[in-house]
Image (cartoon, rainbow, N blue to C red):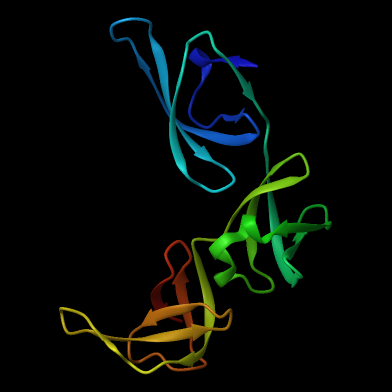
Length: 184
């Protein structure tokens, strides 16, 4: 246990049955009693919230572990990963993977945050190189006159690409927003 005045960015705390990483803290000493205003990131769904703590309020600090996993395959509604260090198989539910499933293919290495034996979040590499499976007809012209077309990647993810990209090309994609970076 720690107190509200001891909270600092980077700590992981449990509030109820949710885990949060503290992103920032500010001590507020306005009229009345001082308090600590903290920005917290929910480890289950990556949402940001703000919460106030009294300086003497007890907060449950928890220890989480970061482990490197390699994606193997989908089994039912669970994704199977290999723990690179221990060589154990790890099952991760679709609710943890969310829309990142669009960029998962066999062999992709991810970073997972564990609390005990439970995976709370999975982080993809910033960029992945994926093969274009098929191209849809060009249909979008931006204000600047640039024509783009939609490429369907080997993972099934749609990505807007320039007109010179063809099926079979390997492209670099930013995983955070699904944007085309370059042809490899």
